[in-house]
Image (cartoon, rainbow, N blue to C red):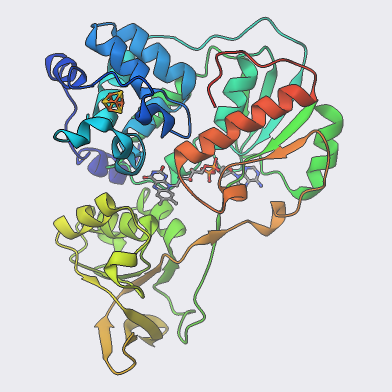
Length: 410
Ligand SMILES: Cc1cc2nc3c(=O)[nH]c(=O)nc-3n(C[C@H](O)[C@H](O)[C@H](O)COP(=O)(O)OP(=O)(O)OC[C@H]3O[C@@H](n4cnc5c(N)ncnc54)[C@H](O)[C@@H]3O)c2cc1C
Ligand code: SF4
């Protein structure tokens, strides 16, 4: 594990519940008949059911509900926008405040890890073979659902480690790598093989379709969008995903001293908080939109603000300045068309979105070829990717003549 990951993991945000606090929190649940929290989870994690088990002290039953419905349950407990999903729907908020569902999920999956529970098991083989391209949440959820039905699944991943954005994008102080690796280790008992460092291109798909009963493509969005600014070629201008990836591997001092981040989404927030966590002296976030319309989750924005990172809203980047090929500053124009601002910078991080990689962008139309996750929804959340992977698995089972398990929640 690199030094940067260790430094960042040591700063993991927030502490979990102990058993007494977890059961007390679970006891606040009103046991709603129609459980809006469960209906609000795209991945079908079913909080109402695991909270019921927990309040009866049945931690194993609670862990089974999470793991069987959501193969990345430990990771999701840390990074789901719960305030917009299960906790946002929680009826208890009408009395005082929502049940802390994500924190309960974290407690239960921490117990699952402490007790080394092995919940996921495969079924008798049905002789079917499926290839999943990419090892992010969408492919993993698809693979787990299929393997639990008796299919053999080969996962082909371009990077050296599975997990997709969980391992390569989301900063370790929000999601420690050991938590991602724990979720991945729960797949060991299933008939799933991983082939890392194995990029697949559009040209390979026909061949895969001859070798497998079905193919799922969950390759996400990995080509950074850019801004057509004068000076964009200067040394020190970089794209958010590349910066986040290298920040995990480099020494903190190499992160740059005066960092300006352009963008108003979650990825921009992650760059800002990562830069601050790596002790970068001077980090500034600049948005085009008013703060109220920024696309980042409010919890992530508040985290950046609470770390003392200035957020400068309603400024459009105009030109990047440099000397000897290196960035020195960036000019902005205000949304009012009158104001101007120049910020000194050694590094400018563009966090203005991602799109599909050209090598796997186009896919043939074929009845046994499926796709899901960020590449089909335009970029959303981990639970949305899991949901789409589970839906694709159900469609694959139908296409290859297998009947899905009744208890698979979609
Ligand atoms: C910085 C950042 C922070 C985020 N924070 C959150 C958060 O807090 N909460 C949340 O819910 N969501 C968050 N998201 C969004 C979330 O990570 C994605 O929605 C989710 O990971 C999408 O899953 P996926 O499986 O579709 O794609 P990915 O996770 O992108 O996985 C795709 C995988 O396919 C591989 N691949 C790509 N091309 C090929 C190829 N040609 N051949 C083989 N393999 C290939 C990639 O290497 C990758 O491993 C964040 C995203 C980013 C970038
Ligand atoms: S909505 Fe809230 S109170 Fe109702 S079942 Fe879910 S967690 Fe319990």
